[in-house]
Amino acid sequence: MKNRYKVILIIVFILFFTITLNVESNNEAIILTYHHFVEDNPANSAEMSISDFKNQMEYLYDNNYNVISEDEFIKYSKEKSFPEKSVLLTFDDGYYSFYEYAYPVLKKYDFPAIVFPIISSMPGLENQPVYSDRLSFSDMRKLNTNSPTINIGSHSYNLHYYEDENPAIYQLENECCDDYNCRIRRDLRLSRDLLEDQLDKRDDLASLAWPYGYYTEKAEEIAKDLGYELIFKLGDRPYNPEEEIVSIPRYGVISGDLNHLKNILNDF
Image 1 (cartoon, rainbow, N blue to C red):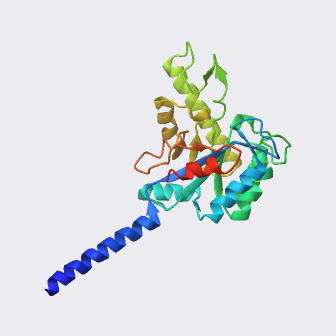
Image 2 (tube, rainbow, N blue to C red):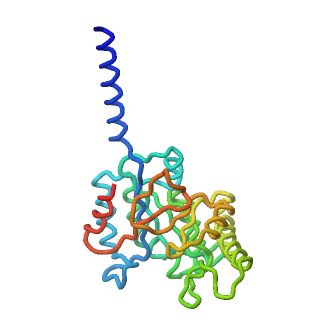
């Protein structure tokens, strides 16, 4: 009889422990993507009014979403489980509006993020401020110094332009395989080298986001070979750490009421 009670107690303990674990963590994370910020009247889906962004960040904060950093994302991915309601914030293209409008909101809530500038569009390699609608290397250095949890990744050096209406990440017409491989490697290496040199982060640049979310198997292979640890694409679904961290889906977030964001977060 005593042995039976012991077995029952053990089973109860195991069930309690399992339920507790499931409450505290799940296997997935949601990655949100933003681009350009304006004071009001967004002109397209890549623009967001700062009031809408403030409302979204307030919603994440008030509803206890666990906004994680790049380092935490890597850690939890390797552990194959994320804390409950884990969200990663990413910002593409490197607009100065991130620094002017979004960054103060992130600071208010102590939210980390990853910024992905298009390196060829960044003005000023010199160590002084440069006015532009894009973040300069000087701006990036300020972010790097003042906010250690705002990480900088690569959005390629110049793989956004189109040839015959095709993104440059794809092999161009009349371009042989060797030339394509060299072009992609040169672009991804240059973007990485410039960021690491200008931000004094030698061998410490972890993330790459594909332009428009497009990529090829060969481009992915080259990026991995160059040392990019986290590689992001687009895709309206959560990331499951059973997947590779070189093909991470992200949701594009649009301006407007909170329903769009709430619908995304309901995918947990």
